[in-house]
Length: 221
Image 1 (tube, one colour):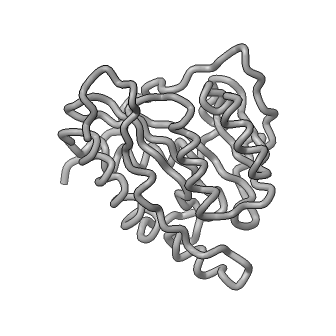
Image 2 (cartoon, one colour):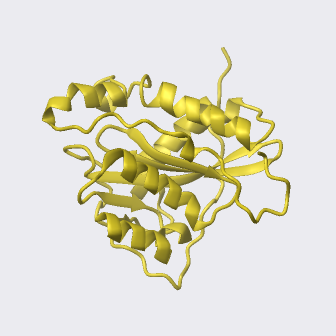
């Protein structure tokens, strides 16, 4: 047995002072009474031998299920838009709150417009306070500790396939959570299916790494 230490957090998002922030509708209370009431979102980075990639996640706070994700070799707005779009297509929410940090990707006009079109309410915690989005950061920390920090990927294609397999084959379906009574997100949702839980989401290949079209280095694909 070999111990694995969680790495120091690398800053991946920057605030744009010119863009207005959403109010904090969560106030550190990440509890939800049902599906698609509260989504939490965050960005992490993935090192490969070909360079760093970035991973955006959207997590349903009720079941801890990763309902949307995307990987890119950049931190532009379409990174978080792709993860949001996957979550919207998989869950078809009504009035869900989307909680994130103040990163410029989340305060961008394009992201705000897509949320408005989908009837999603934006929420953002206070600046520089990790506790305001602790649930999603905990999911990221698990992914980093269990998979990313133990891997040495040649390029982004290999990394994105491994993360796809981790999310869909392990995390959503088999990874148990104390907050869910030692059930996985999928088991928890199935147990409560009679209460109106939507069908289990299947994360499709659109979450995999796609060419950015503007990178100066050769793309991993």
